[in-house]
Amino acid sequence: MTETVAIIGAGLIGRAWSALFARAGHSVQVWDADSAVLDRFAADMAVLCDTLLAEGLLQDRDGTLTRIRTCPTLEEAVAGVSFVQENGPEKIEVKTDLFARLDAATPPGAIIASSTSAIVASRFTEGLEHRHRCLVGHPVNPPHLVPVVELCPAPWTATETMDRAEALYRDIGQVPVRMTRERDGFVLNRLQGALLGEALRLLGEGVVSVEGLDATIKDGLGLRWALMGPIETIDLNAPGGIIDYATRYGGFYARLAEEPAGPEVFSVDNAEKIAATWPQDRSPETIRARQDRRDARLAALRRHLASEQS
Image 1 (cartoon, rainbow, N blue to C red):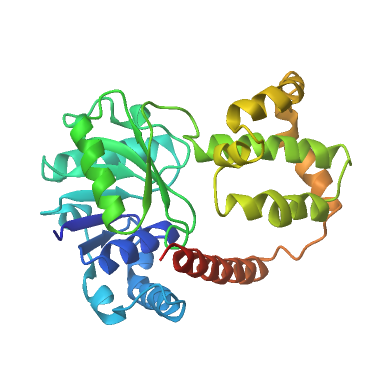
Image 2: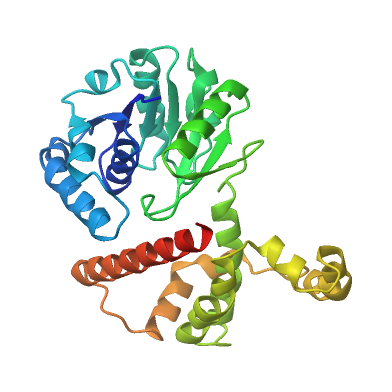
């Protein structure tokens, strides 16, 4: 069944969501607080859809673009919609204001999901009249190439809201991961934070180079993780599975856990120390070119993994 979806915030994440919903056949109404973003939105969407078409991730380019339209006001964008994906700035005061406006203007039966990557929904939905229909739908950047989306409820989010959101995200080709309760950072960023903490500690102590550390993931753990998660990985890494793995290696990991990386590893001072050992051209143009190369490689990986599953 096709639905009408509002995209609130039309930057990188908003454009990706627009493409995903429209590609699946849904009508998409887009608004952004910055009129300049809306002015160039059609051109930006055309480039994105051209890229998806070239990568074999989109068949009906023109139809996809036809299903997307911009709106001059938030109220027009949410008129008649059944689902809202909010992609505003990562600031609690902005989220609070946006969700108050959305709750007032959106049809009462519509779901309102936030793409926030760090702020749990209870912090900006508590005072809303229809707070039961609000949740976090946190994508991974870039959402059109990395399909996971984390569904995190507030304490008052209705089960029906979670069910409907999960079904819609799955319908557009994403992989929804449903949480049972709020946790700062959700699942992905908590896992990423744990890995980053140890990585930054090892680099700050000079134990390994940046190139060596990244190779350990890219050419080691990452190859397995492209096919399976860490729990399935350890289940296959001992003859008797996960319990056997814990019996063999649990003591070693327990000793590591007794001395975790401290908060100082995330300091600017430590970042500057690491950056000094890893000279890179970090101009905006170069970063954009590296991002484009990353996206092309991610698209190729998606095609390969899809072919393996077919």
